Image 1 (spheres, rainbow, N blue to C red):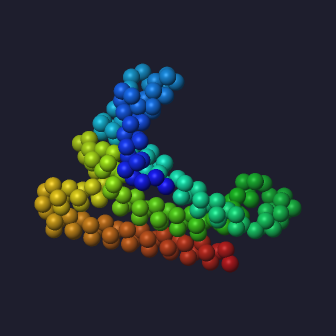
Image 2: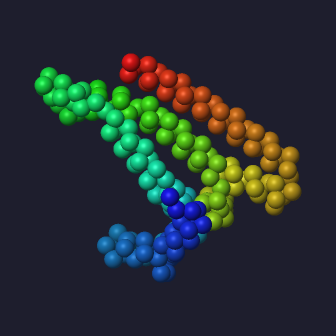
Length: 183
């Protein structure tokens, strides 16, 4: 788990159009004919920011999924093998239902973290170019501090909180349903 400032500085350098390693690798493998301005172009800024966000939180997700996979009883796999179940059916009827509650909780956490992620996006592209990486937290900051409209910023923050509560309710309802199917 790398601090946001470290990840932002590393990826700003990696996505640099003249000395960045991403353009170098894409140009040397002939996937590109000219360097891209990853964080300066509206078309590529958001995909680059999404890639950085995914990279930053992948270790957490891997640890959570691996921990749950290690709790699946071996007897279930042995019984499926004896019954002649294919690997696809074993995954569908044993692995996926067993890991679904943890997948849902991890998705809930990632939804909340991504919806509130301000620092990484702001440090990567400052909400630009042309608002391409402006998310709700970046907009709340701009409304409150750049435009001095604290009321509108507060209203947007409350709406975002209500949306997150609704998403959490949906995730937790699906979680309860998946937990009861395991019993």
